[in-house]
Image (cartoon, rainbow, N blue to C red; front, side):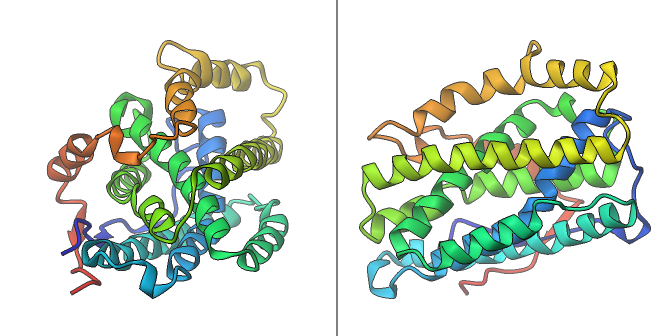
Length: 274
């Protein structure tokens, strides 16, 4: 039986949301919007990579069930972020990195399965680190539009819940340490370059790229007392350990706390592994 739950989020983005929905903070809005823009293509790539694993490699029935529910969760994330991104497009924000990412995803599809899974493991580690930060620092989303605050917290909770699935599939498919780490180093560079490029484009489109207040906010977000850079540093390096496994840092209580205290914002839609 799978340990995951596929959920439907009770938000309606069809009525739109404010341009600077993050409490008026232009930089944090631009950064999170940049992440959202990349998610539909990225999450489809994750789905495709775990589905590409040979069926005879995944012998554990629990892992097999978790793969199906991982697909269900990621499909839900993709759908909601497509709605989110449609509103960004209506506001005039273009996803400039999309053509580049589409070419990259097509190249990844042609790689051997272990390489595809190693890339997915690396990106899932980044989403898990960011998710842990969001749920561990709830004040970070203070002032955010209520629906988008719910969306980001829900997405964070599910990213933590399924953070080990791709990793376990990679190992079941025979993936080893060196390939995992080499792809992680490559993915780290590409992930931050893409995210920074799109964030800067969002700021330029907003006419905020040269404002002192924009970069003061960026400095606080990254290097303030609970800055994102300090929070990501140790777990980023932790991935390089030969003994690394996502659940060596067990934060299930953190995600469960959010799910239980916000159970009016989502509903279970059943297990795809049933």
